[in-house]
Image (cartoon, rainbow, N blue to C red; front, top):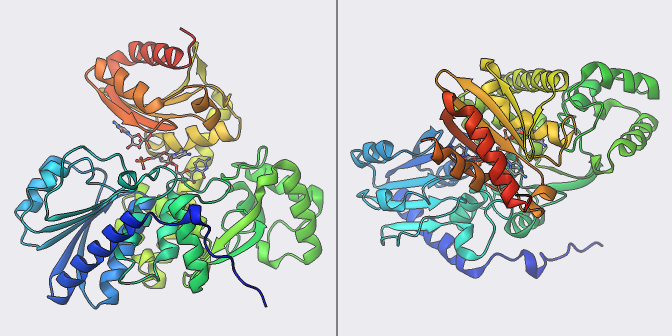
Length: 459
Ligand code: C5P
Ligand code: C5P
Ligand code: C5P
């Protein structure tokens, strides 16, 4: 008989966040029991969609009703609009912690489940505010918005734990495993039987795409030489004598062994823990695949499809979601070929890529990040992806953990540089963005170059 290990003490949830979560569940349940429709507001990426799904499922489990709005970001005008609505409970996910003052003016009760840096404003008694940063956890690695929403609804249902981890995959919090609170949720889900972990090849869409596509679509962990390149992937499989047109699951055991050995040679990280949930439809059973489908729904503004998938509704949503994902992946592959072809412009401390192509606008951050992990561009030099938008330029910057250890902080660099030109910018040390006037692009790049130089002690 095997005994599963108890979650180790380092993976324990801080008691204070559990208590706050219990309070949120109690408030939510009271409103549902009174027959109130719950107003849910969340973010338009994979983590935000999963978070809204976690909350909606908890409400449904008590036969309650909800009204969801998905936003790219929370603006003051939207909060004003909410103030005119007659709901008695507003549930914000993946946003809100930076808008406490405005939100406190809403007349009803409020629950916030966010993981971004909170503002200093002291919350009123009508707000139950959950945020990992308030409990000594790192919101960019230990807990995502969907995980925070899970803690806020955990006393109502724990069946949503796998969905809570889908959001963590969406925000790239799975890095050779989960840490902190994410890891607690994972252990809890395995324990209760809603999540299964096994060791396998960590390739994309292995349950429904032909193998050569699965391999070419594996952006994370990267397979240099194969990721993003269908021809190369097919050629590789032919060369090692493995059928390329069947799904991974249909390979013979011998073929699997050969494939495993050859892929490990390219990147050892390709073999490891795979997390799947039997409760999800087979094509999105792998949590990381599910997150990638939600990314595609978000990028294409098909929020209803994303939420439908989270709620496990109908085959129709899955078909549309997979089609969106296919197009999204093709766009990423086109973007990567463009980078392979054109390379980047290198300055003293940064490098940049610039496009006026409309389709690259929404994937610039993604292809910037993948081109560093695939080493198509020098991963040691922070990369800015610039997209022209009429009179403005949208900036997506990405770097690596090792650059951060040398002092790079893209969030601060972009915030300061953008504000010098009347633009806005910010984000995390590893991933940040900005919007600046087109006419100042050259000077902006010069300034970012200088700031990064200062951060790394080169100037
Ligand atoms: O940075 P962004 O939010 O755009 O990244 C999310 C997307 O990044 C996902 O679509 C995922 O496919 C992709 N990605 C990845 N591996 C990386 C970087 C990004 O899979 N190293
Ligand atoms: O809007 P938000 O703060 O959630 O965006 C975070 C961004 O940082 C996402 O695009 C995510 O993919 C990216 N990221 C990354 N590498 C990490 C962590 C996050 O590219 N290690
Ligand atoms: O747009 P992109 O995915 O590159 O954004 C990366 C990170 O930068 C996100 O966390 C986003 O919230 C942040 N960002 C910001 N201010 C902007 C643009 C992006 O704080 N003007």
